[in-house]
Image: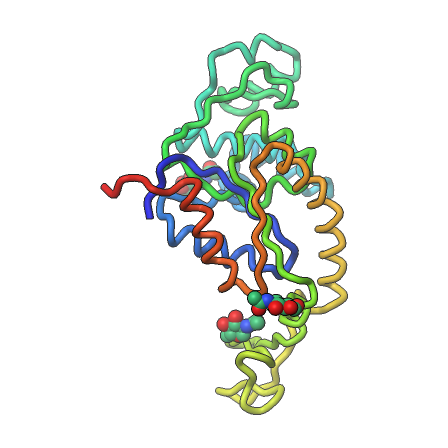
Amino acid sequence: MRLRKAARIILVGAPGVGKGTQAERLLQRFPQLSAISSGDLLRDNVKNQTALGIKAESTMKSGALVPDAMILRLILHELKTRGWVKPSGTQSMSLSSAAASAAQQDFDNDMYVEQPSLAQSSPQTSDDPSASFILDGFPRTASQASQLDSLIPINLVVSLKTPFSIILERIAGRYVHAPSGRVYNTTFNAPRVPGKDDVTGEPLVKRDDDDEATWQARLKKFEETSEPLLEHYAKKGVLWEVQGNSSDEITPALFGEFERRFGGGELS
Ligand SMILES: *[C@@H]1O[C@H](CO)[C@@H](O)[C@H](O)[C@H]1NC(C)=O
Ligand SMILES: *[C@@H]1O[C@H](CO)[C@@H](O)[C@H](O)[C@H]1NC(C)=O
Ligand SMILES: *[C@@H]1O[C@H](CO)[C@@H](O)[C@H](O)[C@H]1NC(C)=O
C-alpha cells in the first residue's frame, strides 16, 4: 500500500508487547517506510569510525551514557544523508556560540548546535512519502522528545497496549530449545513431551528476558519514562492508542489507522 504523505512515526509499548513485530509488519505492508534505529546508527558510526562514532565510542568506554545531543546528531545526519531533511537557511549559525561553531567543525559541515532546541530555525523535513520512517530507540523520555521536536516533527506516536497479565502469561509460558532457537509456549504450541524439544528431545530452557522479575523491573522503568513521553505527544496531538491481547489483534487496527492518516496515494 502506497503512502500519500510522509509518515514519521514512533511505536511505544511495554516490554513484551510486540513492538518489533508491529514494526516489521508495517515495514512489509508499506514499502515506502524505512526503519531508523538509533542503536544501529550508533553501532555503524562506531564501526565506520566517523568523527561522531569515535566520540561516542570514547564516551561509552569511559562508562558514560551517550548524551542525547549526540544521538540527535546521528539521527539528523542520517536523515540528511538520505536527503529527507534540509537545513533551512543559515540563521541557525547566527547563534555563533563557541559550542555551535565547535560542533560544526567536528562533524562535517552539518548544521548543528549543542542544544538543538536553541536553534532559531528548524531544518526542513521532507513531506515526500518516500521520506517515511519508524524511529526506534529514541526518544525514550519527554525531554528527548522535545529536543527531537525542534528538529524533526514526529507525526504519529502509536501507544501499543496489552494487559500486563496477558504479557506475563505469554512470557511465563515461553520456553526455547537454545541450540536451534525453536520456541515453544505452553498455551499455543506446547512441546509433545513437557520440557523437551520435539526434534532432539533435549531440555528446553527459559530465555533470560523471559524471567518474571527481569520483566517486572523493565516494566517499572518503562512506565516511569513512558508516561511523561506519551503525555508530551498527547499535547502535540499526535498520540494514538491501540489495545489488543495479541499482536494479531493489534495489527489490523494499526494498519487501518495508518492508511487513514497516510495512505491513499495513487498506485504508480
Ligand atoms: C558505514 O560504511 C558502510 C560501508 O562503506 C556504508 O554503507 C554505511 O552507510 C556507513 N554508515 C555510516 C553511518 O557511516
Ligand atoms: C507461541 O509460539 C508460536 C510458535 O513459536 C508463536 O507463533 C506464538 O506467537 C506463540 N504465542 C505466544 C502467546 O507466545
Ligand atoms: C483480552 O483479555 C481480557 C482478559 O485479560 C479479556 O477480558 C478480553 O475479553 C480479551 N479480549 C479479547 C478481544 O479477546
